[in-house]
Amino acid sequence: MIKKILNGIIFCALFALACYYTCKCDFCTSVNLNSLTLAIIVGMLIGNILNKFIPESFRNGIAFSSKKILRFAIILYGFRITFQQIFAVGLDGLFADIIMLTTTYLFGYYLGTRVFKLDKDLCMLTAIGSSVCGAAAVLGTDAVLKAKSHKVSLAVATVVLFGTISMFLYPFLFKLGLLNPEFFGIYIGSTIHEVAQVVAAGSAVSPVTMDTAVIVKLTRVMMLVPYLFLLGMYLSKKSGTKCEKIPMPLFAILFVAVCGLNSLNIVPLPVKSFLIEFDVFLLTMAMFALGVETNFEKIKGLGLKPILLAGLMFTWLVGGGMLVNKALYLL
Image 1 (cartoon, rainbow, N blue to C red):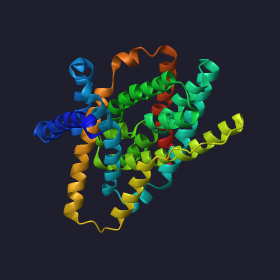
Image 2: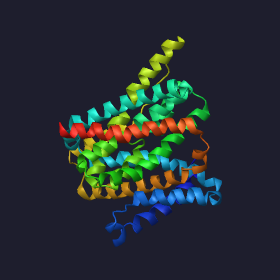
Image 3: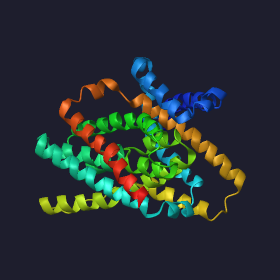
Image 4: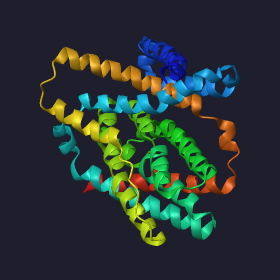
C-alpha cells in the first residue's frame, strides 16, 4: 500500500515545499498570496498542461494527498481553534448553515427533477454536493443511494468546477465591504462546497475569516450525518429492506475532539506552534493535489444541463448566501 502511494506523496510534498517557501517572500506577502492559493494554481497548471508527463505511479499518491492528507490536516487545524471561539461564532453560524443547506438542497432537487427533467439520483447527488460538503457528501450519499458511477462522477465534477471558481471569487467579494471579516467567514463556511475550498478562500481574506469559515463549514459537514440517516430510512422504507450502516464523517468528529483538547490549554506552546506550521504544509500539499486532479477536459464534457443546474445552485449560494448572512449580520 505504502509503495503505491509514496511516489505521489513525495511529488505533492516537493511542490508544496516550493509553494510554502515562495509565499514567505516580500512580494507574496504584499499581495496577500498564501501557499494554499499558490499551490492549487500551480496544481491546476500542471494537471491540465503537463498532465501527460505525470507518471501513472504518482496517481494514487496524489489522490491520497487530496483526500486523506486533507482530512488529517483538518483534524490538526483544531489546534488553532478553541470551544470558546466556536461559542463566539454562536447561533449565527448555525442558522446560516441550516438555512443554506436546506434551501440549496430543495432548490437544486426541485429544479433538476421538475424543470430540467434530470434523473432523480443525479439531482440528489448534485444537490447534496452543493448544499453540504462537496465530493465527500456526494460519495457519502452514493454509499446509501448506490447510484451509477457516471452520475457520481458528474456530481463530483460540478462541485470541483464551481467550488474552484468560489475560491477566487469570494476574496474579491470581500473587498466590496458588505461584511466584516468574521461574518464573511460565516458566509464562506455556509456556502462554499468543499472544506479545502473553504480553507483556500478563507485564508486569502484573513486568519480570522479562515478560522470562522472552517468552524462553520465543519458544522455543516457534521449535518451530513443526520441527512444520510434520513436518506437511508427513506430508501429502506421505500424498498422494504433494512437500512445499511451509514458512513460517518470521522475527520469532522476528530476535529471537534482536537478543538476540545486545545481548549484545555494543556498542549505546550512550542508543540502547538510546530503542529500549526506542519498543518499549513499539509494543507498546501492537499491544495496542490486537488489542483492536479482538476481536469478541465472532463468538466467540459459534462453536458449542459447538469452544469446549468449546479451553476444555478452556485448562484443561489453566492447571492442568496450573501443576503442570508447580511440579514443575520444586521439582526
